[in-house]
Amino acid sequence: MRFLTTTSIALAFSLHGTNADFLGSAYPPPRDLSSPQSHVQAAWSNVSAIFDDYLHESLNTTATRGLLGIENVTWSAGLFSLHDPDAGQLQYHYVAPQIANAELGTHKVDGDSIYRAASVSKLITVFAGLLTLTEADWQRSLTDIIPEFAIDVTNPHAPSWDEITPRMLATQLSGLQSIGAIGDGLLQLEAVALATNTSLADLLVISGLPQLPSNVLGPCITIDCTVPDWVASAKNPSPVFLPATAPAYSNFGFLLLGLVISRITGKPYDVLYSDTIFASLNMTSSFANAPVSEPLLSLSVVAEPPGGNLSIGWSYPDNNPTIPSGGLLSTINDLSKLGLAILNSTLMSPMMTRAWMKPATHTASLSYSVGAPWEITRYIHPSSGKVTDVYTKLGDSGAYGGLLALIPEYDAGFSFLNAYYETPIGPQTRGASALRILDHILEALVPALESQARAEATRDYIGTYIPSSDAEGNSTIVISAPNASAPGLVVQSWISNSTDMLASYFPGAPLRLQLAIPNQTPGAATSEVTFQATQFKQWKTYAAADVGPMTGFYDSDLGWLAYDGDRYGGEGLRTFRFEIDAEGCAVDVTNAGTRSTLKREERSGGDGYRRSAGRYILEGLRNV
Image (tube, rainbow, N blue to C red):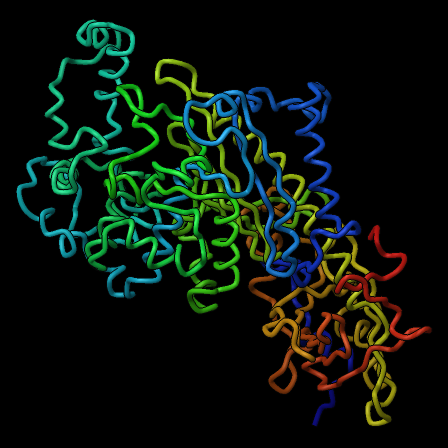
């Protein structure tokens, strides 16, 4: 029989090529976003000061360049966190002159000001569908749910309605047109002709377009058309792509999805959203139909004129077909409740939440993916190349816009709503201004959340872990602080029964621990957090790694392939399970492969921590 040496065992376990990080956080989510010691609170204060300098002090400094135009936009933004309720106090509000002098509604804004949420409505519509439809419903053809689509289809290029499903609508893979009849350019030109007292015929000549009657669009050409008329108009438009071909942002598709959910549940929109989401989450300032009487009207941001030919007005007709795509109304406080409920799986199972918060398709950009209906921004940390996926739904319609952003790896996010009315014949600047505001917030917030998570992990896990009894023999594990350029707690030393495990099994680059299974019972007297070890730098693309596309398949991100290559007796040598106390601090660590449990060594003067306002603060580590 041939005996294996530690060297031959290491060779047997070794992996060729470059290892990499795993998708998601290297650390447990931060628990302190709001205290004076928090990196997040500092970042929020810094970005708020940038906005103040531009909006209130008129300082055109380097930090405020690129904000031109946001002074015209009324907006509200606020953070939220599953682990720090006080994070909800980190908000910023600005009221522009248009709203300060508005004919109707509020003249100031705060966390309870009611805005139209624009296309954030699409996210709420999908959530309502997830809570009410079965898996079989999501896969049904539209002709099965809307039988009218199977008859009297006169356009030879009409969509293949029997191939399109509700899931395709939710994931922007239906191939349908973007707008639908209500937003058609013919109607917009008619409005411009009326506003400028110009002949429509002359305007069409200037535009290079033929004269067409409005009825070419079907019976539904205004926002107050009936649902039957809208269905009649919706069955004939030519698609842009075949179903399940390419992601294409379709407002029209979400009008259909709302109708699908309403028909299957038998509920009109106001009842559907209230019963399914708003009442359950105490979103008392969220509505399908706009408030038109006091006291709610006085809390509303009424940017659009009360009515008229140039605007659909503040109040849409009740339960009109556009509500599921862009008509819902809410506040940043209510949207924060929604974000927390999604992160916390309040209304559906954690497994269902995790499955929902995943990409459904790529886009043509390496930094942007699409879910149902998530618009997933792939933020790249400058110092490390680490990717953080930010699950968002952006809204931009008429005089209103907004965003709900969830960052699952930090159990946090932020909400944002804005308003500014611009006539159809003038420049449309509100959307671009809103994006500049969001750029500043996101670029301040994500690095701060990472820094705070790293600081708390340093505080909670670093130290020497020693045997709790003589049975463990000469065994120790030393966990040291992470490096910002290579995320993850570092296994500085690992001795198992007198064997140097790093030299024997993991030579070379530092062995870094990445969060694999988070704490499933936060606040329990004791619970478990699992980390998985990796060794080498993560590259954002194969080009950044300076390798070819197929070599880069391994060398830029081998972690997802080789995350668990070292196993002994059915358990992984790369798997480290920490027992933590109710405050999130490590008590001991078990390496799964060696079956060895080592306790965290106490420091002089107790555990080295002091409790302050329910949080741990380790002296000397505030600037980690």
